[in-house]
Picture 1 (cartoon, rainbow, N blue to C red):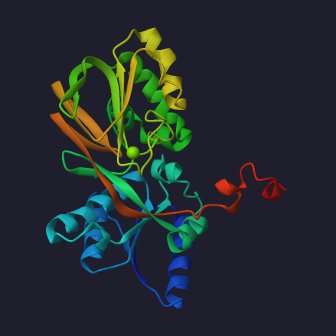
Picture 2: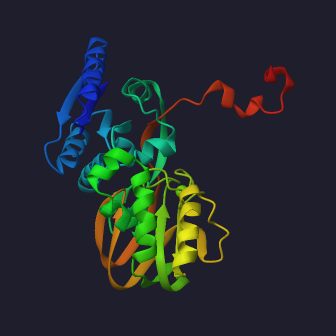
Picture 3: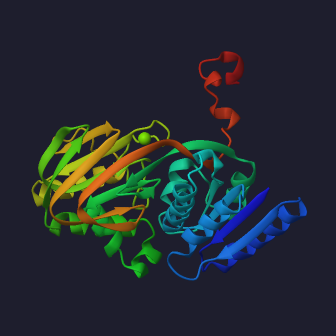
Length: 317
Ligand SMILES: [Mg+2]
């Protein structure tokens, strides 16, 4: 197996653990090329080169931003080379960021040892890849308070509070962020036109360190989950914020939730949207989904979770 390991972390303990896994893989006969990022964009280049050189697996050891760069790097090569998507290396994730939303959504464990176990011995699941204006993402793209929350969460606060930094910042910006207006179109049909506090287009259910704004999203159903939080009063929005965090907001009268294949967002003013934490600016945003287009290493299903075990008295004990 030929493996590229993209490392983006300052965690020396994690680096030491990765070193042991590189050693073990090499002893088992694999070719492993570790590549350490120095500045933004490096992970994208490393992933692209891994695809170009026909590597079988790219392990993204970092945060969701690193994973996003790796996915875009793989697609840079695919777009140029014009091969079928199954020519791409498999993607594995060792979650070493703050939010670790993709790993959280896919059940990839947080320890380096366990995550490397999934990378090497897990299941290669063909997952959908979402895109906004050509920028690929695996998780969720948000506009409105979500984008502001990710941008504003101070690094220091993220370090101390972890995922809670996002919800605190979101609560604050939810109440103070000026609303903007947009038209949301899917399949030629206008789904919503007017002022909104936030919207999200999700391939998975998890963003901002665990916020379930696209609570029903499945990463392999060929659909994007669109959630629009309409304009509402400050008190109402403050009450709604924790429900958005928990994913219990879907039946709120000010929330529109729909599963679609494409979405187009036309904003009345300049808008910043983020895709897996990376900013995309503009007034027109075209979302699309590429069904089951990337093989991502996920944990093997646990024997306890087998559907056959449900309601089967012979297996219950
Ligand atoms: Mg989906």
